[in-house]
Length: 309
Image (cartoon, rainbow, N blue to C red; front, side, top):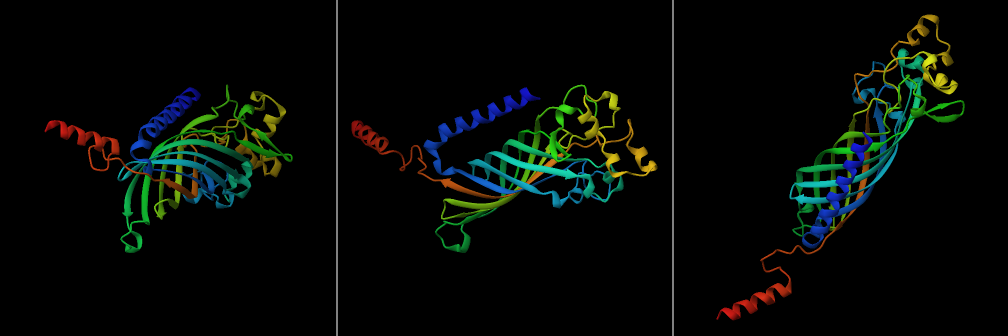
């Protein structure tokens, strides 16, 4: 998985370097770059609502929304299509103590995870207003878009216990033979809009949902394992924390080795929602062969015409 991630990132960077090298001469005004800031959350096994684990917004704990931020560069390759390369950071978190589902509540697990992501998306403009206010100067405009792409991200879940945060991946809390990958792939899907002001400034908002190929953003996926399969006292303490809440014997029987700890049938996902600010680089578009070509081209044409007569 790590090698796939590195190959994808190299390809993304090469694509944009080639595009920038050829496009700045012809269509410099088609580029904009900017920053974004907002919130992040996740859908997974820990926390959630009153029901069982679901891939749906009602299972998301809004109180666990954390900060996110990023930077991006966008290239408008066709009138209704843009390509966006972005770096995004967001923290996601969850705590079973916040869930009203007794099964989740007495499981008593918690986590936080810092996501570092590089994403490449295609954006399609499905609604546009080229002249806001009908000033006939075309300085202010509006675009609404939907996006889809591919992303690679790094993550490292941690748990809070005894006044400290501990990295969970190396502890192998479910008795894995080897740690799950820290570099993973995701499919980003977005929906958003932006306003352009004076042709050079943009402000917008979007929501980005990332469907991942891992079920370990929260370090929970399968079943409880025997303490004999765990590598250290710290791993034993963080793998099964039900005893900290002193459940009844009947409830405690649900958290023994071999019992369900997570839901491997669903992978985890995370969400960014951000406000975006960007600057548009505008220049002359050279119409090759037309009257807006370089002066030396026109001069050469005049000479050629004279030689023909």
